[in-house]
Length: 337
Picture 1 (tube, one colour):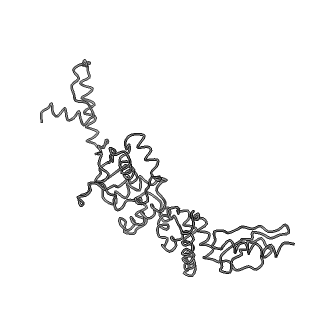
Picture 2: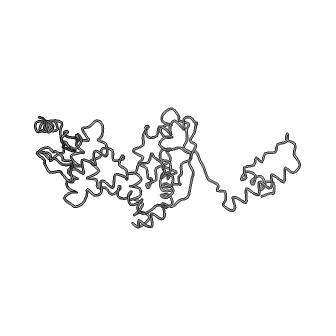
Picture 3: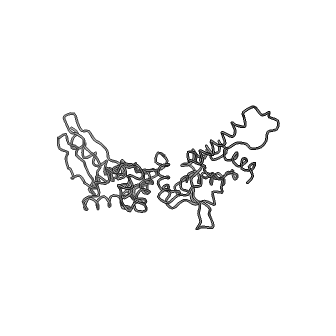
């Protein structure tokens, strides 16, 4: 390469416009300044202090989700991506590139998405809804599966739109896939404590028989695990919880609005340790639970004293309204002067 061409290439790498500007007078010393800037930029690239990334605008249809992606792509919809849709429409483009790697084993696609499922879904949706010119901005990397997992986890760990259950299931998959089931090694690699990781793994390991009780399992959080996990031991309690979960699944299917997660957990806990039937609440400071003939909690008598009774209705514990009304009537008949 000639010296002139070499200088031209160096100018491009350094971000300097190599086109001659004939109309601009050359100031004394400017050549030395440009040359120093060029050499400084090349030195930074050579030492690795500046990293050159390959960004491309591609057709999202030529991309697939990486099999180890930590987001459930099928759950994405217009509501979950509304903020991103509006942002890209306002900016007129995708500002933050998704991280991808090249695909060699599938002629139908060119890349697989490591980080950026929402960006991919949003661009695809916009192209199908009056914005056909939008393209998917990607940052192309060479990554192993384990590196891809750690990178995706790091990017998404602080995101509120990724549910605890999605993250938990991703951790459980990665534990065997990359760390041979060694929880301590995995915690060190992703820079978290073992106890923190354990809570996510416990959430991911909750049995399907129990998960059936929740109309929206994605609403479960790791904070709920501490209340649920003890219900599964010993075996007799476990089976009562599973039976109640099956009943709750039927109830949930008939409801227009799903039962809140705390109410579901409360019903499961009551099934695990059913209260003894109480014909007449005792006069004590301890709460007493009144149940139906079928063993479903209806009312909780918090206290009985000279002033009267303190009651809590349990409308989500499995009993019917008619049974609750009958229990209330029995209390009135017993205690009303």
